[in-house]
Length: 231
Length: 126
Image (cartoon, rainbow over all chains, first blue to last red; front, side):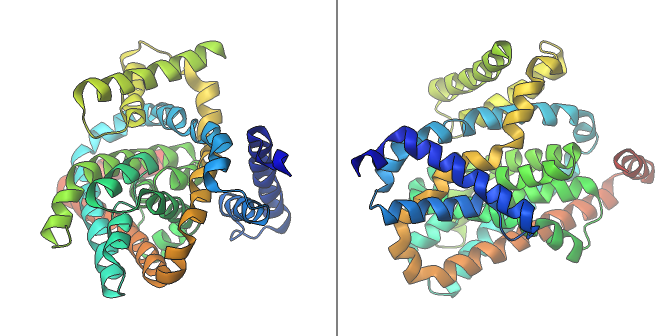
């Protein structure tokens, strides 16, 4: 039984669960069966079943985590391909991004507070729209729980990637640039990979959204949280 | 392929160095991404030097998030106690961010830019 805690086995299991989930989604054609979500659920089920704790899993999982950073660097390529459009529209991009950032932090805090969430949960939720490393950093700085933040960030990304284009349609956002941008602003890298599946151009503006929101959130969130009186 | 790995990790290392030496609260990967785009623009690097690895990483981004998501198991107690505010706030705020970002973008575009560029843009994207 001890062998189940072997890190290579745990890495292999992560790949297999992800592949299985991808296959399931392809076979059934059900969008809701998001492979990231399913793989996470299956992996948690596996760990709970065999009584393996998260720390033991992370001995293998950290090698997968590791690739997040180079993958974010790699987003520089699609970003480069859209530089000329970005330059032409710099002001609208910056202003809408700033609005999205403020609206995101304020809304998540107010809704959570209204529904009676505890202080540490509210603080963990505040940076939930931005990519994990920034979000976890902010969360611990303002008194949240970084691991809860990471999990909520991933789930937010999955939701944004799945429902984002529906929300765009309902809110009548027509410009493809704005569409890509808002997905990246709300759903960081996970949303960006969903946008990338539509087209590289959506993906590029989505990565711009995740970058700008990451920067703005890192710089402004303590200030915004202070202004609305929770920090 | 070795060259592609070398370039991506070099930019990540530069990002790490900038964070380490200045202490700015921005992740090294984001700095690396911006510098990579800037170097491509400056022509120091050609797209073909990073294209294969970059496309692979970007296409499989979701997979790399799985271990962080598995971290959910560490806060199952807290989540079962406060699942309603967590879910409603995360979902509601995501919808609000998408709508606000898109609407403000449209509004500012209307105020600042010319009709010609927007037609141009629509044609390009098709």
